[in-house]
Image (tube, rainbow, N blue to C red; front, side, top):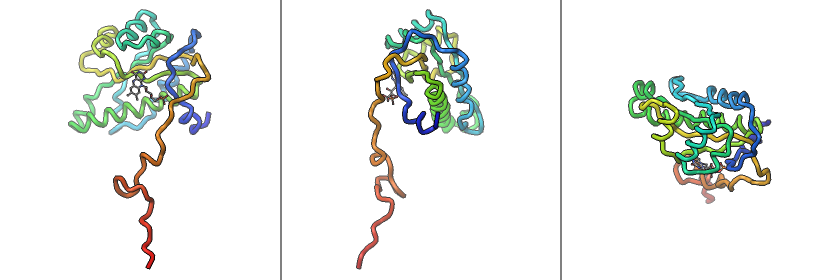
Length: 184
Ligand SMILES: Cc1cc2nc3c(=O)[nH]c(=O)nc-3n(C[C@H](O)[C@H](O)[C@H](O)COP(=O)(O)O)c2cc1C
């Protein structure tokens, strides 16, 4: 799949078929995350691939979003920011969030390329998930991703903001590429 197609066709999917994806395909998607840029090349993420239906149900409950329980797999993304905060202090926190996002986007684009479907889940009770998955206290659960095959192919992605609304030139709020020349 072409990169442009993967970027533009990726969308959040909240209805999954009963069919189970190949876990090897999901691991390939996790592998893509390794190639994201990392501050000082400190890779701060860990991934937990879950296929235990009881755990999947508990994770769905912890996020109060029932569709998650339909998935055959969940990928939980954790981060350990200590190496970054040791090296960069407070800035390390910011770097960690940024690189988690970069790694997740690689994962999402690979999911798209593989014909799989997922939805970024950021709303959940972190403590419940940590307890269920034996995640240590100092490790953060960043997000998780129920993975399956899309049930309703007809569903289209939500509208995206216009480029015009997000792009400035040379200074904040300047929407013109060049200042108009004065005509004498
Ligand atoms: C940080 C973050 C947290 C999110 N949390 C949830 C969530 O808890 N549940 C959910 O259904 N979607 C969640 N989403 C998905 C967004 O709702 C979705 O990306 C957005 O509506 C745009 O749709 P699209 O992904 O199809 O382009 C989250 C997305 C991000 C980036």
